Image (cartoon, helix red, strand yellow):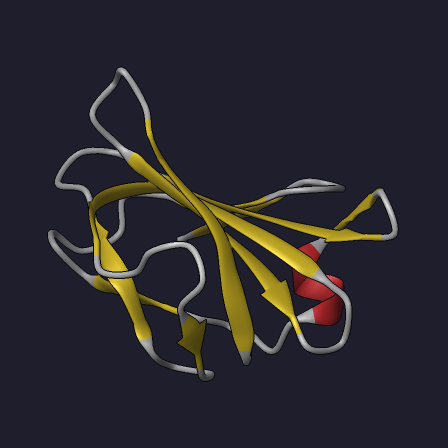
Length: 101
């Protein structure tokens, strides 16, 4: 189930250990591990957009990696939502209006 707000997309209760993939060709510019035990991945896309995907229980990429559309970034957690933020030139956008999700 998707929850649509004006500037964030939340995948509510994704299937346990579902693979989370890159929404487009990109370079990984950061990965971070939060105190809650979840990963966030920040991607710089070739078209200038930046995507932040948060709420991963595992992470398969590292800063500097190049990924293609559909390539695995990691897995969704077992009891956490996955959120997607999309940025362009410092402005947060609604991912559902831009990305083919």
